[in-house]
Image (cartoon, rainbow, N blue to C red):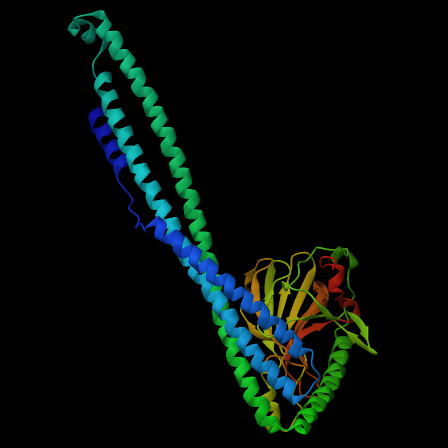
Length: 430
């Protein structure tokens, strides 16, 4: 019975788990080559970004709007190349990790084989009683030599077991790394899909703008004036509904204003319009400069409360002879666990769904705001609108009594001005 147990144990020890291996030297060379190529792409990306910022700073004219869309198209192509480069890097990194894992698997097999051989040797000694050894040995020194051999085998067994444990630990760590890189790759592929969607929206916007203006500056200025009129109508609708939703807020449920409670939604920060009264109108959020297609990140972990696009009904309103709805455009409402809720507006593409949990810094959308782009809402130029609410004072509701073009359009509605919070009070110091 003892022999059968040892045999089964040894079989378990030496069963191999084989992973495919790639040439480590070739992988390292490919990884370095991709890294160098990406450095070149990043330099080009920065140049295009600088050019785009210059174009967007020009006066509001049809020519500058078209030029902005054309330059944005080049910048987006550059962004896509960088993302594809990152995906290639993750592929190579996964292969490198698999190569290391394969080597560790081979080492584990070696350790298991050594342990199996040692156990077999020990079992041979252990199966002979001491009295039998005394009777069969010619000299007493032979017995002590055998005992010394057993001690040596025991020591070797301990070393091999320790080595096996350490190698297994490293293997498991490499497996965790691999899963992390694979998750990163999934995120990158999602971003790539989003970037391609931004390119499509950009092209549609240019075609729409040229068709609507017939390439005439006067027609473009007329469109801008109509947009401003629609915005005033929307603000009246919003103010009326907020009055209807009046809710008494509990101050104890609102976290104290403190910098770095939240993180920035963009990598590069430039505030174009702050929170509060601006030119006799209340600005309920923070506007940040962002060229179309800039990755937008969650400012804190939380759950997506809802998404929408106030531009979606514009075609229907136009057929009915009504003013189109202009406000947030494409938006995302994200509820955090600390009593705060954030909104991201004027987006060209959303990457999340209602009910989805997101982490701080996770890319959830791409910025928009370029005139004529689906999802821009009320916006004359590319930017990100970041709003912050006391969670208890915001709901996603339709503008049921809209006198403009926003009737039945769903969007986040605050229960009054006091439900709006200044994002700069919670974001890192500038």
